[in-house]
Length: 334
Image 1 (tube, rainbow, N blue to C red):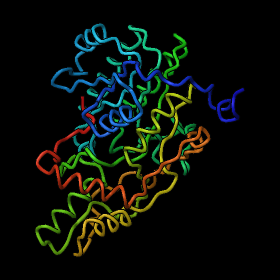
Image 2 (image 1 turned 90 degrees about the vertical axis):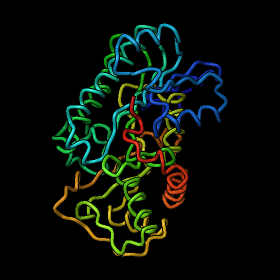
Image 3 (image 1 turned 30 degrees about the horizontal axis):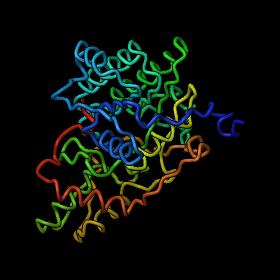
Image 4 (image 1 turned 45 degrees about the horizontal axis):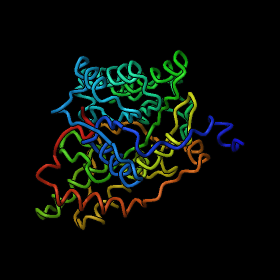
């Protein structure tokens, strides 16, 4: 008999076969690498994820040929060109074009080869800039987007709608998840293209090691953000693949948020920086608040496990160990 949660949000799907071939698109990125780690911990024996040097997901013929040769049973589409406010605002054409091509190629190839189970990962930036908080999944397409990342958001919305279209036209149980702001091991710490938490980790670490007396951050520090450790997202993805089958997207987050100023102070404390923190109000803040309503996924039996302080300490340790390669751009890139 279906549980109340499954009756409301879709029939509970059967557990995935641990011997199934699972293709994690974007396996070298923040999300994809966490997904691979989690699948292997859960006993999956055939997880595949070629890097961009082996398979450029923007190249349609290459993607179709790879699917024909490899024939995955399950697909997790975590590949994307990603970046922070500056990267999104200064290179919107690249963010729109690259992400549309990645998504269309992978989704079309998966459909052509009859992939039954697929999870598309979007982003909380798909929701309107001034959506009612916390943001419910039904807020999608009800208002204007944040202009600093509208190109990326439009691409992700297109991917979500393509998944829904496949469900309607072909009856395949494909699903979409919308994670909040992510961080963790394997993140992108590039000085210009990273998201807020890795950017803060790098900035305060460099200030501490150089003896800088002050750190200047973008904006006013007043916007509120929600942060989810990428390993918690990986758990959520598998949970959804095994327990969710419905048309609408599912928010994945913690259900709590803080100001950017509070986040900066916490990062500085964890990293050990003791200087002055200042704010450049001439730089953009982005969306005033972005807190997800996570009642849909919590009703399905999932909840986050990693506390923010613990997660920041882990991400900082990873950054220290991998500084030489940690400044790359686009952690989930094709």
